[in-house]
Length: 229
Image (tube, rainbow, N blue to C red; front, side, top):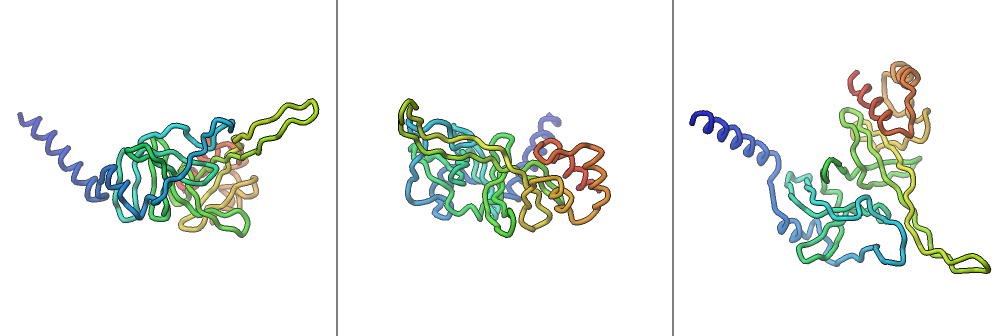
C-alpha cells in the first residue's frame, strides 16, 4: 500500500510540475483562439492534377503547440506546408487552416520532430520560418526542407504534356548563435565563420572529422562539439 501511495505521490507532483511550466489546453481552445487560427479557411494544395506534394508529412499528425505565453495545446492535427511556409491544422469538422500568428509560437512538436519559428538569414536578408531543430545549446542547428513547383507543360510536337508538380529539393542547414538570426551554411567556410570563438578548435575538428556541410549527422556532431567546449 505504501508503494502505491508513493507512486501516486510522484506522478501527482510530476503533473503539477508540467502544469507549472505550461497551462495545458485542449483542441477546442486551440481552434477557438483568434490569435492563432485564421478566420478564413485555406484551400489545400492536393489537387489531383498536381504531382508530388508540398507537405513535409502528407497526412495530419497529432502534435503539441507551445506558445510564448506558456500555454500548451495538445493533440492538434498538424502538417507543415513547405511550399507555403505555413503550419496547417485540421479542425474537428474537417476544415483546414494555417497558424496565422506563428511569432507567438515557442515550438511545435510532431512525433520526434521539433519545429521552431526561427529568424534566419541568407546574405543580408532576414526571414522567419518553421525550421526543424536538430541540436540545441548555446549554438543551435536547424534544417529547412525545400520544395519547388513546376507549372504544367502543354503538349508540343512529339512531346507529351507534363502535369504541374511539386518536387522535393535538397535540405538547407542553418546554425544559430544565441538570439542572432540563424546563418545559412552553404560551404565549409561558412562553418568556420559562424562560430564566434574557438576558431582553431573548430577548424581542427572540421578537418579531423571530415565534417560535410551537407550531412545532417556531421553538422550535428560539430555543433554538439562546440557546445561542449
